Length: 123
Image (tube, rainbow, N blue to C red):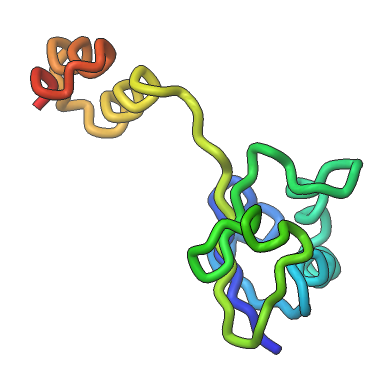
């Protein structure tokens, strides 16, 4: 059973820089155990000491949030695609700051409008 797992940038140090890795398992928990056997430490970044998914980690099986599929007990099938995404926080200011940093072309007036939540003025 081959399951494609998309790894976010922040966790690629565990996969040798690979963006996508393959794993096996009948459930998400089994898959994470399998991945950890080949990419040591990865499971520990996703699972709490209590054995649940960290609240700041979003995991999707075929674009469905695993929290609605049974979390770690979510059933997997051959050919499934699993995507791991870290949760993003910051609201309007976080998005405006990210846009300013990444593009360097955003004007201070547009950034201020974006921070203020004025989407029309930010265009």
